[in-house]
Length: 433
Image 1 (cartoon, rainbow, N blue to C red):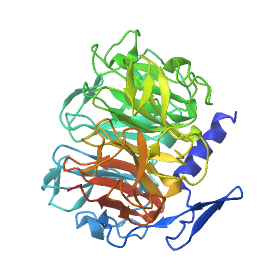
Image 2: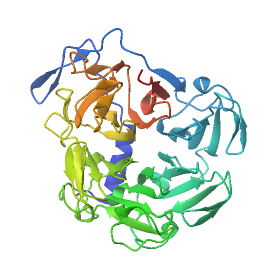
Image 3: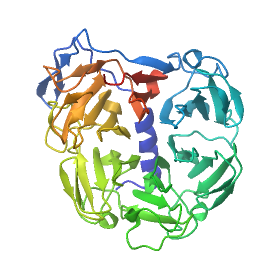
């Protein structure tokens, strides 16, 4: 296994990689001597719209219309209950807000449709490292992961205490990590624990924060209160303390289907928590999505034991996907780089597959996707420039070119918003119906 420093460089490269997108007019994709059909999208397919960015890298437009602002490698998105959209403008070392209703953005004046910087500043300032992951709790607090600074901070919505840290509204406070790369502090205060390239965040209904400690090949939890998520298992829980919940610290793929703490992960990234409290992990190095369940259940058609970690999507190899509508964890469930995860109101899992240049969905137990029937546990293409779903019967698929879709979120209206990192824009797929 490569040393941590090499893995850090590899994860960084994965976040900024640019791959040539196969055009819709090309009849096939070749890999390892085999050709797979590529079917162009129907001309009447719905279209995506730009929410923020001009498509040209740079910085500008703060205070003005979001679609006239320049972004640089936007890599993550999050939305709050008011419909405000937050963007990790990674290359500009800023977090920016696209304001929905106007008034103020964390104390900064803003009007509807405008983009405003709410955290960070010029990258030349060491105090403003590049943000790469975002999450919002039910109180409206915005969590920001800074991989190269090895820490996680919170932009507080109101003054008080967040994860055991005293905070002031509108200001940024560290809640996990010391700023020194490493692994330490399990069971102790999160702000005194070492992290190594944290690049994924999620919160649950109790306010607990989950962190992908990427180069340590672990997922960790910062508890909001003693009544924290049952994903902590039988570990003692204290507000503000950090606990390992998945990964044994060895970067690999063994232990799938067994206890999460004894399983290997390889560069875990994006995270999401479903309505049942199951934690979904983008296991980037293994090219899969895995689920950690607090109790025995079935997640996207895959049985998962209580406290176990099991693959629910992806089959672990690199290559073009063979077909839509088949089991997500089967031989046709390729995910080349699962960079972003989000869940919609029907329990479907949206996956931004950066190196495949598509957004795909794993169909939830409702069997409804985009207002149509689909097979639970199957994987289908939601948006992209090419697909193998020849009949387009499973989704109202959106034809749109993506250079490197990374962060993804579903708004309260059901629209899917994703950051196209190398396209220098944030775009929205229309809601079903």
